[in-house]
Image (cartoon, rainbow, N blue to C red; front, side, top):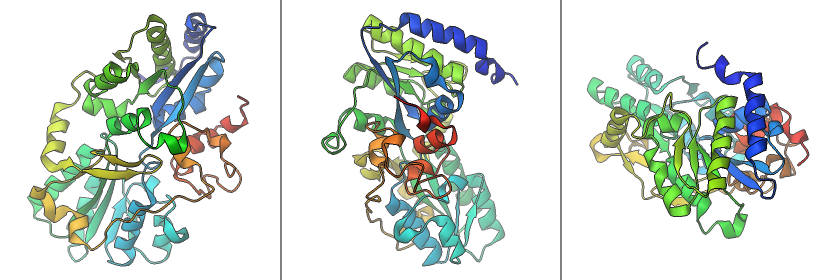
Length: 375
């Protein structure tokens, strides 16, 4: 398939690896964070780290929407299903995220909650159409990539005049998380890690473009290279970051030019701006409460806001004491640094959110055996 096989060519990978080894200055160390969980998955699956010299280290960031979803938001969704009797629809990777009282959406379903996995927000709208006697709530999570489809669903429900459809909106914004990693009070608690640059998100950037990252390059002097999700994409991005560091540059470069440009998808951006507005604050798992880091539904579409339709207020809940997801999401610790990684906490019985989604750092390390690495 075009644009897949070409970016998984082992011979080309060896050539790029040779170039990286030749260009990496042996007298210094390089620390690059791949923000997106899709990149973490590719690095683990294809053994990209094994091809890099010892002084080039990849650090896993918080770019998994399921991983950064705080327990309190899952609790809200569970209360909607169990206490309010709604039909709750969400994406499959949300179902096993641990919540309070040893629950998850999947376990709440076993207790009698009408909780359904859908493949798209449009499926939830269709369900509401077919069941006018049931209140249908779409539990919407994700970064900028999945926000436009939620906006489409809300506008479609408005056009159809649906009175039994609403959205529990938990869409968050990528740039805010990067800012938090670079500069926030929480570094006193979690510590910090040296960062020389970022591998920028792929799918998110198809929507917002490369322009929003220019601030980080200018303000924090950190280079950003937007990369696709294939192994050769990631390796080429690492090579480009090394060149920037060696030359003393801090710019935004676009390796993923086949899908991303500077301005992004303007139509999608306009749609999101019409339906959503900034929240003043929103809690992220591992990153604490971040200002202007998430979206809420505008007053124009308030009738489709589940937080206004139902009495389910948000309450912050602390993570499991043995779980190191907070530090892992910040890149301060690796999955194998967690005492319960691979023993108590596995993909089949996850304690922390990083083990739930396949894009989570813990799940990627466990699935592909990266925890056996010695570093």
